[in-house]
Amino acid sequence: MIELEYFFDGENGAVEVYQLIQFGAGEPWRIVLDGELLGSLEKLQGTWRQLSGDELRTELFNGLICHINNQYFNSLPEQICSRWPNLVEKVVLKSDEAYLVICKEGISFKSFERIFSRFVPGLLKDEWVVKFQVFNHDFSDDFLLEASPLVDKRETFGWEEVNR
Image (cartoon, rainbow, N blue to C red; front, top):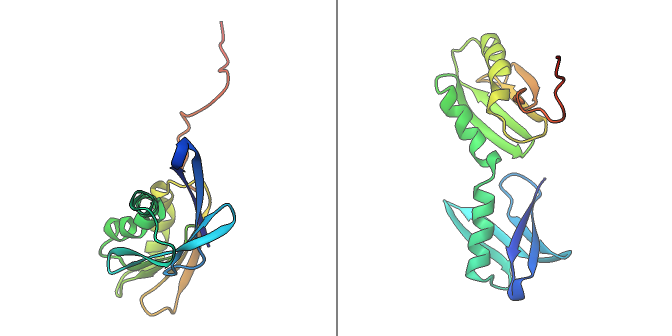
């Protein structure tokens, strides 16, 4: 399940906080405001449309779909495929914290495991652990990688000790 919050400047300057919930990959996004289901959105063949509920204002509709499209989990599969085009056949988004990776035929799967495990944390931008279930081309071998994003050690807070 993926849950996003979208802040929208509503009427009279009041900020409305919409929840966007997707229960499974490929399912429609539910739009919730103050605990009430307003409708659902779906992207089919590259085009967003509202599936249910009262018609949303154009500004709100465009803001919601822009917010969903701008989420990092949408671009990570493409980044992985472009990073290893000769090794990765497909990356499937299961949720914002779980992906399936399917490798191409004829590669050294054990070598790819070492490479992938070492470099994929550098691609992560979210603050949580992401699980990658990686399979060889015929699903006869696999490994699970739980990766945390790399943190720049230069970003420290607090006082630094000064020796005089």
